[in-house]
Structures are given as C-alpha cells and as structure tokens.
Length: 236
Image (cartoon, rainbow, N blue to C red; front, side, top):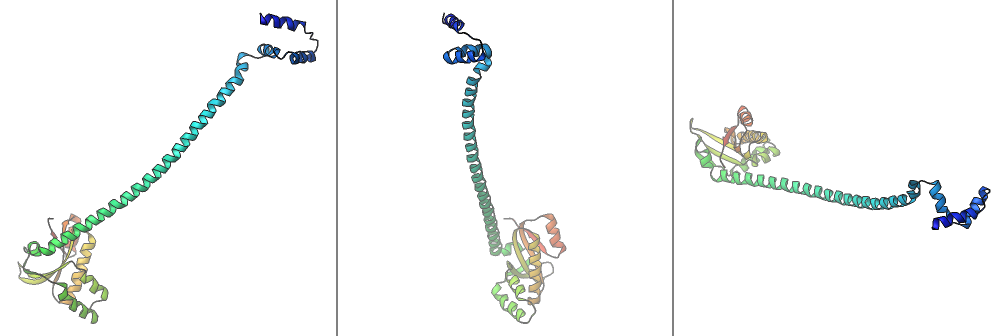
C-alpha cells in the first residue's frame, strides 16, 4: 500500500529534464532507495554492508596476528633462554666429567702408590718406592753441572712414581719411571720416555719408562712398545 502511494506521488511530480530528477530526489529523499533498487543489483546494494563486515573481520584478524606475533616473540625469548640454559648445562656436565676424570686418575694413582708391590711384584723383586726427596739433590747437582736444564729437572720431579728393584728373570737392578694414567694416551708415553731419560743421566742407571693404565687401546700399546716403553694394564 505504501509502495502504491509512493508511486502515485511520483506520478504527480513533473519530470522533463535531468534537473527535474535531481530536484525531485532532493525534495523526496525516500525515493533514493527506490532508485537504488532499480539501478543497482542486490549484490551492489549489499556491498557497503559486506565491506563493513570485512573490515570488522580484518580488525579481529589483525588483533589475532598481533597476539600471535607477541606469542612468537615470547617463544623466541624462551628458546633463547633455553639455549643459554642448555649451554650452561653442557659446561657443567663437561666440568663434572673433567672433575670425575681427575678424581679417578688421582684415586688410581694413590692406589698404585700404596700397593706398588702388588702391581710390580711379578716383574721385580726387592721393589722399593723411591721418595723424591732422595733424587732432588741429584737433579739439582745435575742442573748446576749443566747436565740437565731447569725444565728437565722440573719435568723429572713431575713423574708419578719411581721404583727401584731387580728384574726377576735376569736379576738386574733397574729403576721404573712410572706414569699412572687411567686411560693410556700418547702423551703419557712421551712423558714417561722423556723423564726416564733424564733420570738415567742423573742416576747413572738403567731407567725403564713405564706406564700403568686401566684403559689401553691396542694401537697405543703397540706404539709404546715400539718406543721402548713398558705398559702394565691394571684392574681398578
């Protein structure tokens, strides 16, 4: 009914030019909606509404993205902290491994020192642990006489053990310059050989470079034997 009344009212409005149309629409703004329905499709009419809805959705999406970015940033910080914690943990583990290794080495050396007669009794008779106090004067005299250098004297004094005895098979008196190492390494061999050589000059006796170890790789043992060092495998 309202639509019919609107049409009748439109019919009363004289329209001769485009200006008449503009004037009529200004006088009757409610006619604009009818004009839109004629000119525009439903999709175009609803486009502003849909655009507003899209803007609302975009705003919500932007908020979600902002939250995700913040969460990602927090996660990155947490990961960085975790990496730092892991790095510290690795350092602590490495330190503890080193400390435990040193502890095992010291404990092993103490056991060999206290029970040397049991470890060397099979090859030596009349075995005796030589206190370093007995050889310090000899080393100092050798240094003064330029037979050895100060570095060589210091190196000899860093030997783990010095044992004197007779080789059972030949009844020959010798010294054993002993390096004690839980796991045999090449540098243990080199140290034993070097220090045995220094003491041989000072003691004017045969000094056999000897290494006592728990863990011995076959190739390293062969290397020691090829260089003239004596290797003893011990249980610990």
